[in-house]
Image (cartoon, rainbow, N blue to C red; front, side, top):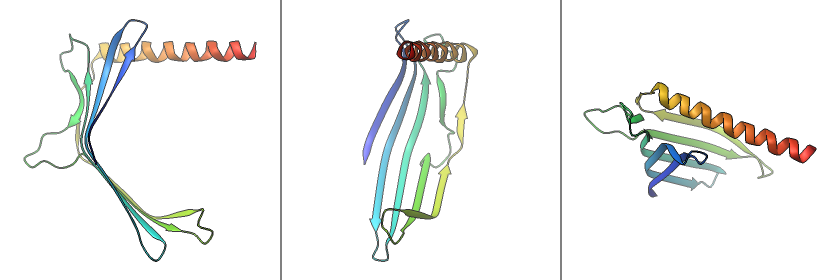
Length: 133
């Protein structure tokens, strides 16, 4: 289990953090069974994405909708069967449960992200043309 992981999207060309994603309460379990089946389960207690613009009217971009009783944000379960050659797996069952999330997107945040992605694509294209030219 992992208590918390955070990751940021940073536009280094303007030295500005655009988004911060935090994931809390990560648990993974796997069980092998005698008949060649494998059960895999995962739980994520909390997922949140924050807008790092200090002038944001709604600083939380994505978070679980508040409820009376807390529920994990994401549950995943897989039931796999190994095939005869033991190098291939067959998925007998796959389940994903995502709780209701609140999403708040501001125009300035979208503009900043579009600018950032466009700059990254331009850099990627420049590298590709330098390698071929």
